[in-house]
Length: 162
Image (cartoon, rainbow, N blue to C red):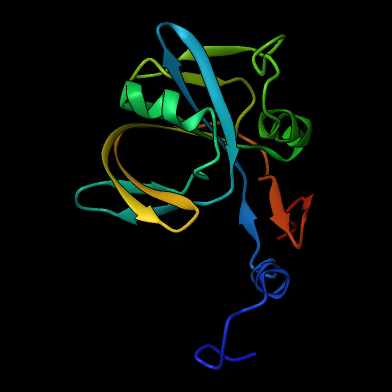
């Protein structure tokens, strides 16, 4: 169905947009010294000058409001071997940090051990975005690890082959 010819079918929308491969991140922060985080594939660079990124957490997220309140967070770009971490941080309710190694980054937010890269950010703006929020954040510090990226494509996780 073409845009403008009527409402789009949600399943078709997800199917077609699922053909866009994306990296996988976990966004982390601290609320009163307690680590909090969620899996987020809706991540992108936005601007070089000033250095800005975007994320798009779901309005139903229980973790994002806690991170938003702190105003600072870390985007942990996941390495191919971190699929189980991505899955556990996507679930609501559990202690996501149990048994997970992390250290505080430049803004205090958790940097998860073994990640491919870490982007420490300060919140700049939050905009309405349908059933998500569009978050703009200023990059404070960038650090890289090593390995290959975890990729999400057509509803599943995989790796990257050059």
